[in-house]
Amino acid sequence: MASPGIFQGEQRGRGALPAVLIVLIGVLVSAAVLFWWRGTLSGVSTFKRIPLPGETSGAVQSAVVAEAPVRIGETFIRYDGVPSSLQDSWPAFRGARHDNLAPASEKLADSWPVGGPHRLWSIPLGEGYAGPAIRNGCAYVLDYDGAAGEDALRCFSMEDGREVWRRSYKVRIKRNHGISRTVPAVTDRHVVDIGPRCHVMCADAVTGDLKWGLDLERDWGVEVPMWYTGQCPLIDGTQAVLGVGGKVLLAGVDCETGKVLWETPNPRKWKMSHSSVMPMEFAGKKMYLYCAVGGIVGVSAETQDAGTVLWETDQWNYQVVAPTPVPVGDGRFWITSGYGAGSALFQIVKEGTRFSVKLLKKVDKKTFACEQHTPVFHQGYLYTVLPADAGALRKQAVCMEPDGRVVWTSGASERFGLGPFMVADGKLLILDDDGMLTMIRATPDGYQKLAQARVLAGKEAWAPLALAGGRLLVRDFGTMQCLDVR
Image (cartoon, rainbow, N blue to C red; front, side):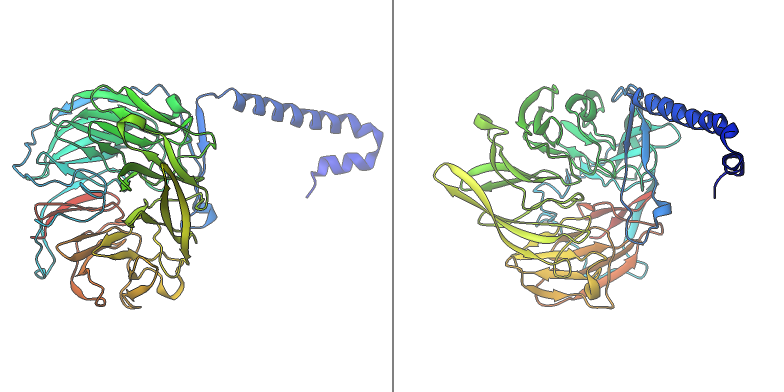
């Protein structure tokens, strides 16, 4: 409806025209000033997230983060926690071999008592889905302290959950469907994490002493992903391998010094995704696979030509990719995602000294896919939990052969959410959104449930699982627990 004053002035004739012009000029000047003011805010980064299934557009808020000088690792606190004597480890995202398979030494109970596995300890965490890594008798987890406004790498004793030390730094972050999301990578000497706004920090894994920090936004022009950083760092030998997706596509950084050892050019300007870098070997060549926003690339992981592009393809190009590529033997790998993407099987080919890659097969989202977590390849079969948009099979567990033939699904009465899953001792452990933990046989011989118990009482239990010495770490939006599943 038009403003009464302007409408009436138009009816009066020319005498009201100056007033109209004054109003219009005022609007134009205000808009110009606002445009200029926004252009001068060199320290403001704005990015949007798309709604999750079930959210309304009104619930979606853009995350506007005012950038201030970030002194990575500036604060250190030592606590009274003491590392346990636990020798077993789960040192990175998806474990030591990056396959989400526990070592053969892990022996789990075939059933649980009433009430579920015994809880050894429980600790509160800031909002998010960051999963833990286990090494040196400790659990390492990236957290966000909302009261202090700090990213915090926290080290807890696996014995009783008491905090051993904390290394943190100030960074302003607004909630963007939770905050922290990534899993640290740990060796006997180093621990590396990536914060929500692409700050990479390396500390001494035992003492917590700061080694170095990198700001990927500032140093390499990275665009922060729409739900903050979801990529988990990879430590390969003595270097940290990062999927950058800015001025360079990948980079290797010396864990001790922070020196950049190699960089992969990014002429196609592919962007950082939520997916993590996956090591792989084919035809005697070690390589890193990275699924960026734009396509998938394989680069050399060998010293003499580290970071050199061996092959690349844009036949998998989606704006939201969280799962990592899953090698299934003979140079083949599956990649999947949610939001309707489905899955695809690729084949790496070597002809002489040159590598290439070709698409072998694509399957629909209703056949095999996963929204947040990476399928597990165990004894020749792939296991996943289908996304919410998979039609009649939504949220069911699925077993599939590498050629794309579905072997079984869990059935309409056995559905799971967006939560994590892993395989240990021939058993598939699945944690659903609401904290229900289910243990089934990891076998192609049909869906066989062994045990089920609610182990968390919060919401959005989406963090990757970690298992070491029969101690299973689980977390939801605000709590992490240690369960005895031996």
